[in-house]
View 1 (cartoon, rainbow, N blue to C red):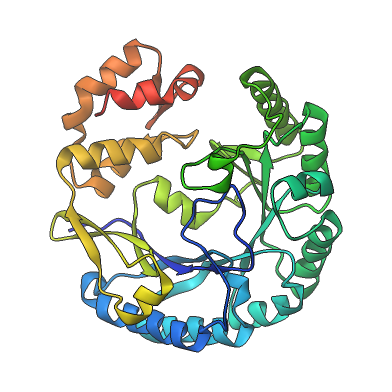
View 2 (cartoon, helix red, strand yellow):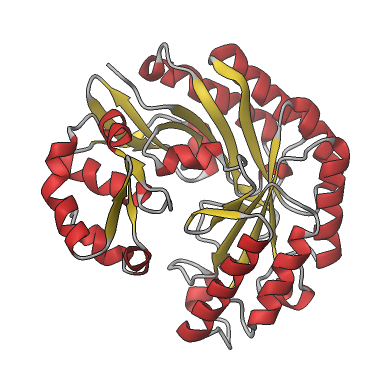
Amino acid sequence: MIYPPLSLYIHIPWCIHKCPYCDFNSHQIKTTLPETEYITALLADIDQELPKITGRNINSIFIGGGTPSVLSSDMIAKLISGIKTRLPVINNAEITMEVNPGTIDRLQGFYTAGINRLSLGIQSFNDSNLQKLGRIHNGSEAKEIIKTAKRVGLNNLNLDLMFGLPGQTVADAIEDLNTAIAYQPSHLSWYQLTIEPNTFFHIKPPKNLPNDDLLWEIQTAGQEYLATQGYLQYEISAYAKLGKQCKHNLNYWKFGDYLGIGAGAHSKITTNNKITRFHKPNHPNSYLQNNLPIELKILTNEDIILEFMMNALRLLDGFTEIEFINNTGLDIIIIEKLLQQAYAKGWLKKEDKSISATENGIHLLNNLLELFM
């Protein structure tokens, strides 16, 4: 059997301060951080999941959160060392860690531990916007952590930036991009602030959010500017220099497999021609007491088709027939009629071996996906 590529995701659930827009599984630190116990639990978590992935290589590792950089560099070193003694990680695997400004003193230790790519949670360089977002860093600290990361050897950098902020103009958004590009990061995640359920902003939305017309103007201007600066858009909110796309996220979008360990971490694993999803207990205290997988679900063919399309059509290059066959285990003929409908509506196009959304299809992505429901 041909298995999809396999990645490893590790969730660190704590943060110093819960941002008002954040709907991730993150918990504000209120007592002493049980980092030793948590690393031990993560490695035990891998041990119990090994039978599901026997004989398969790990192609990328992503440590997300929360704020993973609240952990000491010694603990990150213990984690990565423990992973490599348990799992066959490919040579030169991309190992990403999310880091927020304020942990600048730990970057050298993270690099020594084996981290070779950072994703920095900048959001904006504008102090006023950062305050509105509830961030605990300022623009100067954001700039300093970028410079320090490069100085210690962490040159493969993603910068997270938001647009559509309260009171933001087109010029404001472009200024954030311009500041980021001055440091020549290899990758930019530039995405719109959205008001999600179960967040403080959902209860008390910020004032003066840009309307739809202004959001479209900001997005269009930003995309055009990034293209002129050599940052190629390859996904709805991801831009990279040539050859610097995020390998871990590409595996998600191409419907590859991933093992998730840690509080609330989700997994998608292919075994014996079946695709199974499961996740771990959300709260870190619950996870430390019991890290057994919960909500096991075997995907139906209908689930597989929709999930594949929801991910693959976020990519500007879309997918190939071979990728569909290998990563779903299904024959492409099963969706041929639906593809023809999408072609006829002008929502999908086929060029060479690639099937992707047209510009109209991207704008009407929800309508496009409804065809595959």
